[in-house]
Image 1 (cartoon, rainbow, N blue to C red):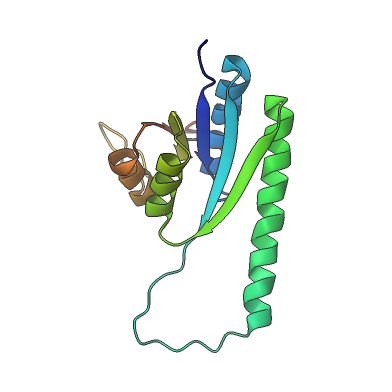
Image 2: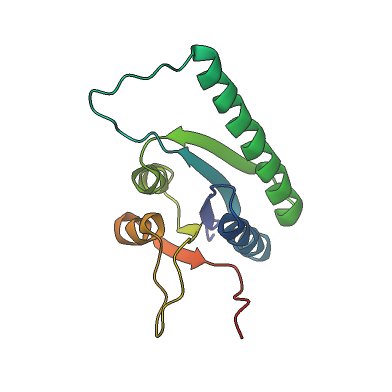
Length: 149
């Protein structure tokens, strides 16, 4: 018996992530595979810096991210027609996406890109490029349709 395709979709709540979500959901729906979403909250390292951030502010931001991720998960479930898992991580997005792909033994990572179209090729955003290099499985980089003529 063949196992189900395990798909991990990285979302950052952008238009390119919406494109990635739609592609990942379609692949999961058509293949009978399982879909999981991951959002990584980037905590930029600032050695020796002091922050005057109240714990309530940190909690409010985390709650906001959870609400957004839950909304995206609900959308994915409607598109796939099956349950979708969602995980909120913090750290370096590329590292955490690759780590999640490895830990979850995913067959495919789907991500968007903020890269710009070059004259003769596409330039990937830095996160997408690192995921392509570091992920332990195939990576599909989806981008919104170009509105250029």
